[in-house]
Image (cartoon, rainbow, N blue to C red):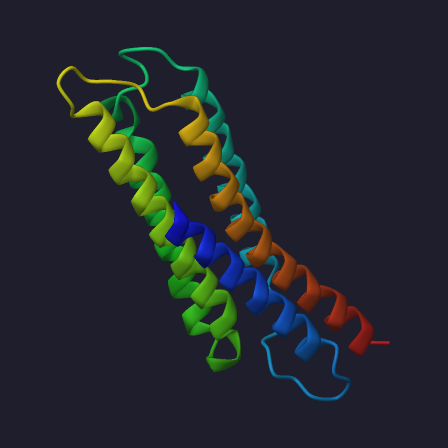
Length: 161
């Protein structure tokens, strides 16, 4: 988790730096706002958060990894799709692409922890406090992505006036 929190702090620092760049009048160092990225990241955050909250209260066997394989597959696919979209948007979008990479890494680490807990002898549910700690780190990364995208939106609105 320490690595994920460090990643979240790195992402937050990146957002702060990008916000400073976005606010520079006349110089575009980041890409334009993308409504699709905003909407898809928001929907993905909601789905991930809903699952983590439900997982905190789940009991065996519903808490086991095998019951959540579809969630992990869908989430991996959604993050990959967002990464590809944002890579295709060009070099001025590297901050968003990087943050999506951090998100992918955090979600993969959580999935591995879930597999490990469920694969033990006997299988076990993940501890609620562990899930909450990871949920906090994952949401920090989502927040960084959305903060940057919304800053781009504000900058686009300012530039058009």
